Image 1 (cartoon, rainbow, N blue to C red):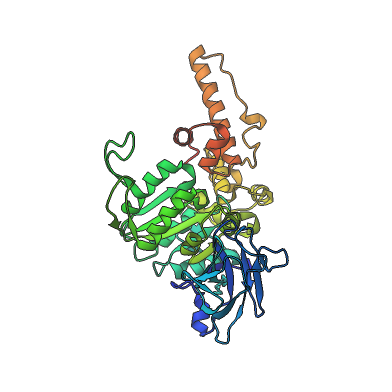
Image 2 (cartoon, rainbow, N blue to C red):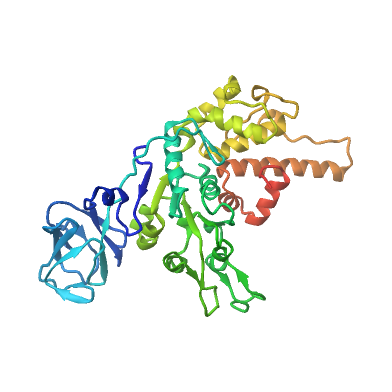
Length: 454
C-alpha cells in the first residue's frame, strides 16, 4: 500500500509538518452548504472561488456570485490572502464582511449560505515495518500488514483516536481490540457498537443511553455505550451507517467528552478512547454530503487501512495455522499448511476476506471430525461450498416422519445459513438484509449451527 496511515496532531495539523517546523499543505473545504465535502487544494498560486464554471472551486449555492473571492498564499508560511471580488452577498470572516484579509490555517469563511474552512491535507505517516508477526489476535507475514502493525503499535501507546478502514472481514474489530489490550486502558471495558445494524432511534439510545420515560417502552433508564465504556475503549463499527442526526450528537460527544442520554436534562463527563471503523470510504461519503466533514476530521486523527486478503495471500498459511490452533489443532504451524488444500484456498478471491477464510476452516473442521492435519480437512471454498453432491439433503425413511422431517429441515437451515453468511462475507447485518431474517434471530441461528463463535 502506498499510504498506510494518515495522522493529524490534536490541533488538526499533520504531525510530521509540526515536527519539521514547516507549514502543512492545505485545502479549502466546504464544511456546510449545498456542496458540503467539496474541496480544492491550495497551491502556490491564486485560486478563484464562485459559481462560475471557470472557477477553481465551483459552488452551486445560489447566493454565491460567479466570481466570489480569490485566495492565495501570503508572505508568512501557514497564512493565506483572501480577496472578495465584489460579490453580491459578500465574504464574511468571523461574522464580519471583508474586502481583503490575511487568514491562518483553520480559518472559516462564509460565502452566501456556504461555509469554507482552510484545512491541512492528510499526510502519510512513514514508519518502518514492524518486526513482529502478531498484533493482538492479528497475525501476518506480509510487508503491508507489518506496516499496519507498526502504526498500530505506535497508536496503542496513547489515547489518540483511530479510524480503521477496509473491506468487510479484514479484521477491523480485532485491530480495535488489540489497540485496547495493548494500551494503558487494557484494564477498562471494551464496548463495541455496530452502528450500521440499528435504526436511528435505537442507535441514539445504544450510544448515549436514555432516561426513564424518554419514549414509549422506556420503562427504566439505560446507560449508553459511551457511559459503559468509561475508563476504557469504545469501538464504533460501520461508522458510515450513522444517520446525519446522530452524527451531530456524536460530534458533540467526541468534542466535549460529555454525553446526555435521550430524554435527560444533564450531561455526564466520560473518559473513553474512541476507535472507529468503516468499510466505505468516509472521504467519499463526505464528498457526497452523507457524512459530516467536521466529524470525519475529529475521528480520523490516525487513519489506518487494513488491506484485503487477496492482496496479501502470503499471509494465508499463517492465518490458517492460527485458526486451526484456536480450534484444537495444537501443533499446527504455517510450514504445515501446504498441498492441494492450500492451492485451493490461495486461488480463491476471498471477497469476505479473513472472516470468510475463518468460516471455510470452521466448516472444514466440522466436516472432518477425524482429521489431525490441515491436508486432511474437507475444505469447501466459494458460494457453492455447501451445495456439492456429498453435502446434499438426505431423507431418512427409516425414521418416524416427524424426526425425518426435523433432520431435513435442520440440514437445509444450516446449508442455507452457511451460504448466506459466506455470500455476505461474514457480515451479520448484510446477511440479515439479504435473507430477510431478523438480525438477532439470525445471530441465534448461526450460533445454533456452529457458524458463529459464541
